[in-house]
Amino acid sequence: MHRAAQTQRNSTQLVQLVARHAKASGLIEPGQRLLVAVSGGPDSVALLSVLKELAPTWRLTLDAVHINYGLRGEESEEDARFVARLCDRFGITLHCKRVTVARKGGVRDRSSLQERARETRYQILTELGRTLRADRIALGHQANDQAETVLMWMLRGAGIAGLAGMPPIRESLFIRPLLDFSREAILEYLWSRELPFRFDSSNANPLYLRNRIRHELLPVMKRLNPSIVKGLARQADILREDDAYLHRLAYDAMAQLVHTGDQEITVDRTGFLALPLTLQRRILRILFQDLHPRRKGPGYRTIALLLETVFEGRTGAGITIQGVRATREYATVRFQADPPSRETADAADDAMGLAPNGLALPVPSLLRWPLTGQLIRVSLGPRFLPSARAIPRNQACLDLDSVSLPLKVRSWQPGDVFQPAGMGGQTKKLQDFFSDIKLPRHARTRVPIILASEGILWVAGHRTDHRFYARVGTRRTLRLELLESTSEGGTT
Image 1 (tube, helix red, strand yellow):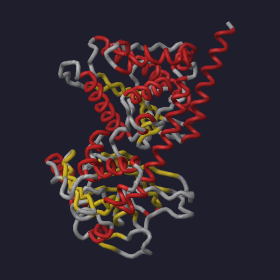
Image 2 (cartoon, rainbow, N blue to C red; image 1 turned 90 degrees about the vertical axis):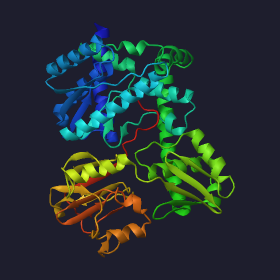
Image 3 (cartoon, rainbow, N blue to C red; image 1 turned 30 degrees about the vertical axis):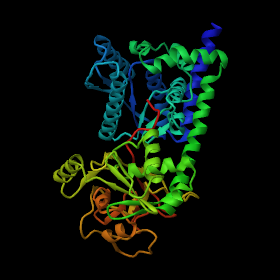
Image 4 (cartoon, helix red, strand yellow; image 1 turned 30 degrees about the horizontal axis):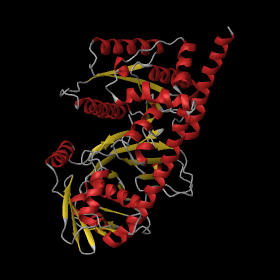
């Protein structure tokens, strides 16, 4: 009896700790709508139950989504039926999505199958979240998952980004409220609430690296250090902060060394080579992703080849990587993107063909910008509170009372003008603004332009309009964010 009472207290404490952590870190705010990913396993069942317990106090609206890949036959079908019964018991609307991830066969395809399933999952979650106008999408990853992720990327020889593990919040959309809590604590919570859950038989398959880490490596490490899960989670937190700091240093260095022309980017070779190697690698990844936003940055070996062949090579040395040509020209290295791909051109035709005057941008909403694959997130905020930190370039905070709804998003058009913030209300042609910031011509049409009937509100990722940005005294704010849709290293 004493054991049962203690377990009940611990489970109640788990709910309180999740609430405290979510509030302190800004994962969840009162009144939000959350889309909860539920596989039927213990972690996602616990997540749905905890959020249901918090919903009345936090005024949360909950939806659940289950993605059925059908990879385990009847077992997958029973998972879907189980989640449907659970959501019916909780009185939560369930959205069940059935998808097919093709098997190609062969041993080498196992990891790529998991990666394709993962990419499909995030795409479905993002699109459904946008349709439901969800403020956050909640995932059930917990502390043991974090430890396994860090070890997996450590074995692969990953850098800081991989060893930083999974962030509690990603793209200001995906949240992991249980990331600080162990698998044991979650199982204890389920037992106290008498909540059933499903076991995924593939989690016992030793062919997958994560499963070998879970069942073979981590138990050995626990014998050496019983607190290894907490230790690896703490390490991930530390490295995530270090990674963010190094990224800021890389951008600071780029401001001095990188120059953007109409169709190219040039780098001061001497100044670049004087930087620490860690910043060199980061700058190169950033440049590649700037030239091709929809592609992942090059890996360690590719970066090493680029440094050796081009930056340390003879004048005229060049190499093409991921559709980007890098060439050494005396004191500079020139980067040029290949012509826009048919895929990008088709996306532009689709976006503008369906809506010649722009795509509708509801408030709130989450929209995928088809020309780059980036996400545009729109939300409402409270009274504007000035902060000592500047608003990042990928965000805009506007005065809602000065803007008429609905909003639209479109590409740059000839004749566009706006009043760039910081220029005292001076009107400027958007074409001239792009020239001033040295944005290549081929990149200009990909920039999302957010506008209302009053005019351009935000040149996304670059500058807000002087007339509309939030000031001290603004009562209601309109928050805009431009988010990269690429996944962070080492997440699952």
